[in-house]
Image 1 (cartoon, rainbow, N blue to C red):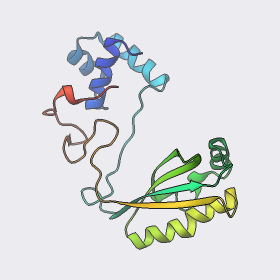
Image 2 (cartoon, one colour; image 1 turned 45 degrees about the vertical axis):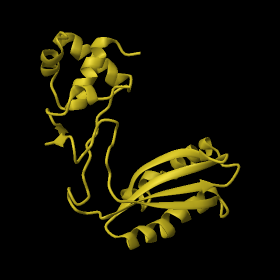
Image 3 (cartoon, helix red, strand yellow; image 1 turned 180 degrees about the horizontal axis):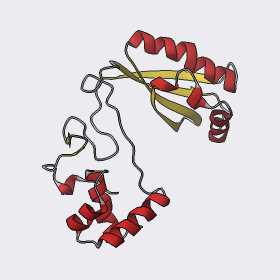
Length: 189
């Protein structure tokens, strides 16, 4: 459970992950040494982390124009631990298709493991080629030729919100949350 000073610190970091401990201390009235100690603790315990997001679409570097969610329902008997063992053994991060995979989630659909994968490519035709020519063959070679039970595809038109608090087209200015965005709208839990 987070204490009140940790909540204040995290709220400031949500608004601007690059903010200094001194600025957090001024904004929250938490002593700078406490900010430093608590921030390090939150980082070490993996409660908070940071990442850089490259906007690849029309409002970014314009290298993608097609985004789709693929839901791959696996056959009965394939478990979550089987999936994790396979991605570690085969190093999924080095596969030909990893550069177009925006995110991967594991879920459950009617008692089967479901892998939800968002692919981003320059053209829809390229996406279909990569999915059918590389992603599906990887699943079949890794888990067996009958391992893919069902595939569902949803075309994604626009991202509205990410990571709970970030609305890229609404509240992000120069890489941080716009100062005009009300604090009460920032979600901690």
